[in-house]
Length: 94
Image (cartoon, rainbow, N blue to C red):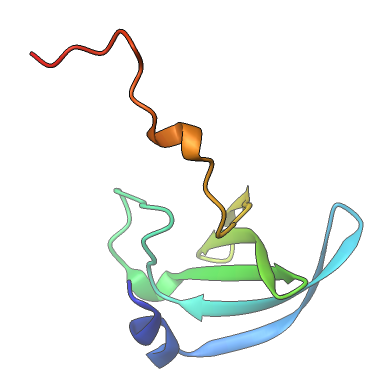
């Protein structure tokens, strides 16, 4: 789902405590690409909340039918460790 598609969805905002700390959230209806529920076809019963800390996403929560939830702690950064792109010395192309 692109940012533009996300902006077109209904948005609900509020505050919620997670681990004793208050976070601002934005909630969107429908399936997002963050979590795939293969056994769920009814998009209208699925909501995704994005929790913010210092204008960065800190948590993502998926809610199904207001009864089932999955909360993910996330750490987004624009900085990438260059070592992730190093090819190991023992790498061999087959």
